Length: 390
Image 1 (tube, rainbow, N blue to C red):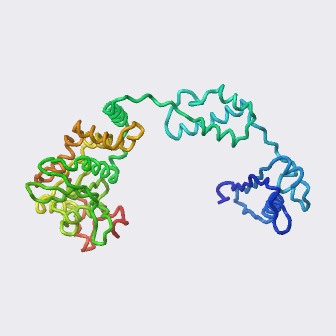
Image 2 (cartoon, rainbow, N blue to C red):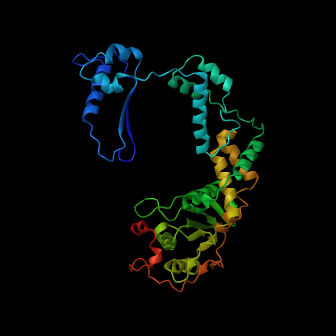
Image 3 (cartoon, rainbow, N blue to C red):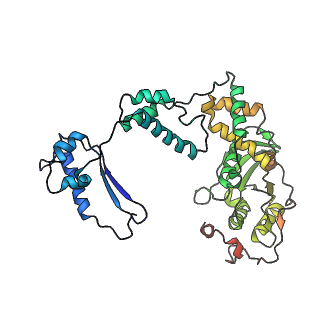
């Protein structure tokens, strides 16, 4: 490790004088002896960037205990026996310290504060510094007084809900549009809010995970919507597959296995811009799903999934808006935010039996491969070798 960066070993708060070991040595004496031994025995390679031993103690501990030890210990504990006196924080140093910490805090979160010391006031910092606090006491004071004034929330729960939703709709969800699990999580939440309601002729009874033969959650089919349609039980398995072709082929193959996963219908959710090659095994399984198994390809449209993302994000932050779960769902239901969502309705609607236009492309340079049982794969379908073992 020291070949890449300096290793720092720190011994702090060693000022315990009333504890002695069997040899009668106090804690400062034991630590000082350990530092001396480490200093003498640690050998560094030519490429090392160094090892630093740092000891921190009160002036009396140095003067009355460590400095009086023999055997070269004082010279090892403090370079050449000359310790660096640590000063109490003053007004200028405290203001500078807080400013540096807050700068790093805000930059790491891409935030722009009203002023560099926000939410502190410089006069308050200087007043506290007059008490000559240690750095640790100053940190504790900052932690206790880091209070950002919260805007006053509306009295009406519906108005608080509107405020939460408006703020979440301003967020950037572009990264989530490429994340299978986050899209699936939002869709699953959307269907949960519709439990007990009838959408596209399907009365939703439950939204659950899909389990394999061993009882482990299935990797490629994200969840299952169970309900009743015209008096018959429907179990729709939903797989969000935005990723590359190897995951796609495995997911589509599983969507076709209704008996194994206790499904009556399979549904692939995927962006139209992510083409499927006509000569690939993914296309074969997609054809099977749509034309023979009664399944469906549902196009993931950005304008339809973003409102679901926003509602789900607002739900996760509902406590900040003083909304109970019941109040939140009541607002969602009253505004029909999920009931009228085209993406959720399309997943539940009767499958057309067709693959949407513009989804399939033909690559003359690709090499067709057979199913995974044959062991023959196109070279461009092997991006993620880990998927082969699932």
